Image 1 (cartoon, rainbow, N blue to C red):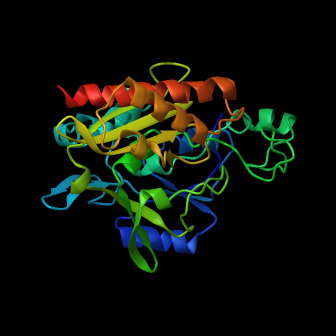
Image 2: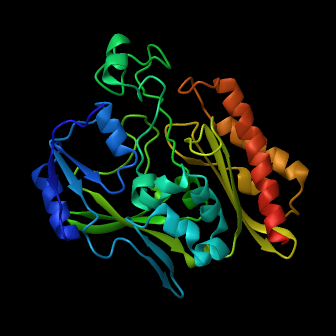
Length: 330
């Protein structure tokens, strides 16, 4: 499959990039690492008239630590750079664990943090060639009005399938967004819509420039567990991130988030109640697993059954909680 025809734009500043987004809105796509976008363009899921390569913008590829505030990850910071950062590994282990599971080392060398948090949703009926999709009458996410996953439904259930947002939710991360009106910073928990088509709360003239990890989340024990078809390269069919803050042997605060089983990543709202004020043990981990399975809403967006994926959310949540506890004692 070949790429559709497009004109390549290469801005040298955020302001220039935002101007291009404004002039060509509706006809332009942002390209950073291109590890997800370019294969999708070959499948004709996207055929933008303009492709804007932002890799020439200085200052977007960095890990900057500000004592007393936290860490800024530029949108162009590669996943490999985060994986190789001793500071991230020590202070934000849940993010380090999640990044390590993304795709393969070669793809992590190209893929970026900004690209990963804004990844398109995926579905067995959507991520196919144009010829395959045409033979099936297309779907509600692209070119059609039928949902093959939930027939008769008006909502797209394509699954959000990025790994790092679950970890970032556990860390109370924030996202810096540039637009023609200036910059704004929003909690990553407010970035996503629970909709397979309208997946992210970004205007066509918006561009993510960085991700902030607050210092208040530094030092929390963390773990990330992921179900995938192939253990080395695939997207999550279920992913669970856990971050735990201890006071002695007692849990002082905790957060659990899931990905891969809903149209958006989700924090498990009742998970802290099952962990805070207690010593972490297998019973508490089982309770968190049950809570996570209730939030998970997998449908037939992959080759694995929804029932199996929901059960794996339960299993992986328990494992992630126990792994976070084991990491704190090391």
